[in-house]
Image 1 (tube, one colour):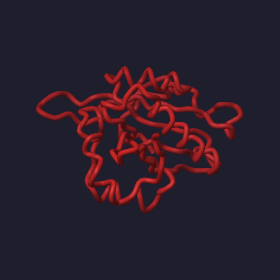
Image 2 (image 1 turned 90 degrees about the horizontal axis):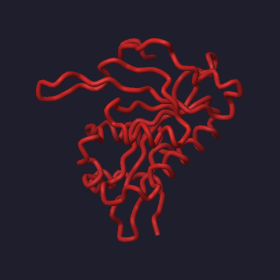
Image 3 (image 1 turned 30 degrees about the vertical axis):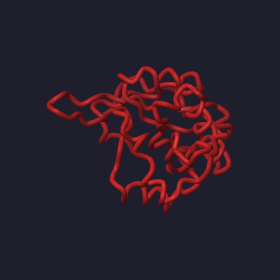
Image 4 (image 1 turned 120 degrees about the horizontal axis):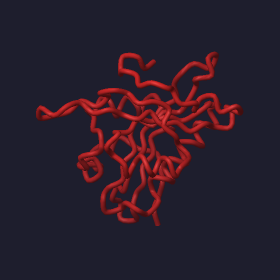
Length: 178
């Protein structure tokens, strides 16, 4: 049986099987530790019965309550290739949404590569919609052009009028994101 539990520092030494996927954004250890210290409830791992890590979600709460922009943000969601198509990503997203609801968020957002149609379609099935396109959000390697991202959002119950998910009519640049 799969266990969903809080991510721990020890997990940093066990999650390479997940992070080696080319579509997974990887960060330095201090970045993961910062999330673990500031938003531990938003850092959840799925563990197989034998102790192997199957996937994880890392996020945070951010924004302004006064401007109705307080929200949960998905920084990273990844499932190891051998554990995909089992519903783990959907379950991890559901947990992050529940935490964001309890914290009084108006919506949950995430950024995804425009080219990652498998992920885009999965998020749409989970109720997310494209709020805006962010031009050249992802830095490319090996001389290729930078890649655009979709900023996808899902309104939570606090956003009764669904104002947080009304799409912007034009793309934005990374420096225009608050």
